[in-house]
Length: 90
Image (cartoon, rainbow, N blue to C red; front, side, top):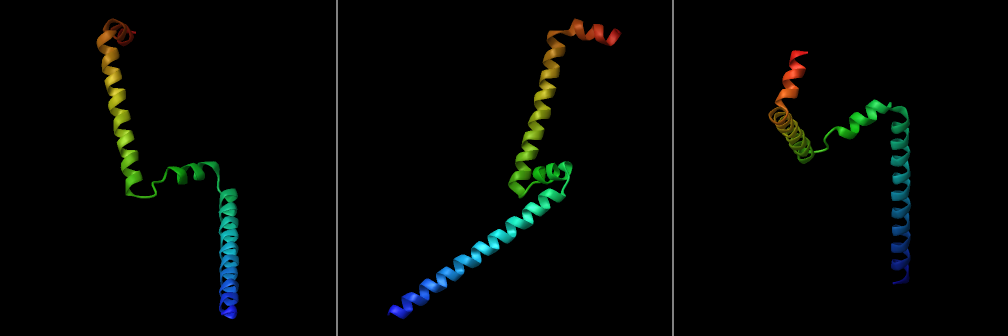
């Protein structure tokens, strides 16, 4: 019984060490990739959708921004049509 618990403890310790080593290795790779990339490439990777739900969210936001800008433009033209007419004449 004692040997079983000692072996289990040793096994768990070995697994924890292996996980820690893998984590350090992946973090080192991420840091190397981050330093080798330019700012534009990092921004591009940040905005690249990770899955279909993120892509849907980006499209949703983009479509609503277009709709809002269009509505604001129409509101401005309707409320300040003389100012818009003066801009067109210049």
